[in-house]
Length: 311
Image 1 (cartoon, rainbow, N blue to C red):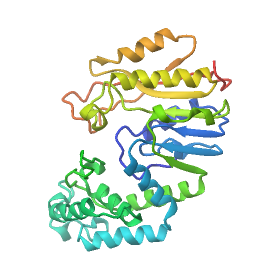
Image 2 (cartoon, rainbow, N blue to C red):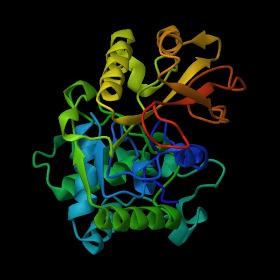
Image 3 (tube, rainbow, N blue to C red):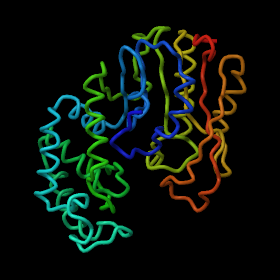
């Protein structure tokens, strides 16, 4: 399976063996409405993929990987690493940097990373090189995550890891995949997505921020109850138009329950089916004291699994 080069919050790579067999067998256009790390769309056999996400930095980064010559991408990555004297453990080892594998290379990279981050945040031209810089920052940032403040500045601290051979291979395969796919990247709020271009032969996968989990995208009111209600209305509209969809979400998690989603399912029991998924975010990076409590994760579909047509 193809895997995202980004450690994106809520990524579905580990769930792919469960959810892909539940998808329709025949798809013309696949819409990854909240594409995030693109793990799902990368693995779909279809005529066209529309990757959509509200994070414009993410979409410009992907377009850079798709449009820029792959050799140039890797040349720039290593140029940036060497320019800022960041670590390359896979090449020189931990001892070379006075570090141990258990603690990582954060202490060595901290000042160098901050200089790179400062130069990125003050760079005025958002060209291909700018987005290659962003990728390097993500690689060396805390947990390889992406976060910008209200001023549009990347504001995560340094992480423990660096650009290793596994990351290079993952990025190389990702670039090859999106170059060979008939795919486009769009940046729209789901409420503004034009469903009139879709038909019954298309399929929309929806993996929104989860209302009852505590993740970066839920901070500062990024996803709230109104967002949840608007999304469910959007899905109802898709269903009314005969367009197939699948929604990833959690019904209950760590003592909380998504009452809006549960009520919507109960009111549409003849239209939609919730399929339980066997997965826990116990090992994720969510900041919670109780990491042993599994989420009740589901895939909600509006088509018959045997016929792949709308119910």
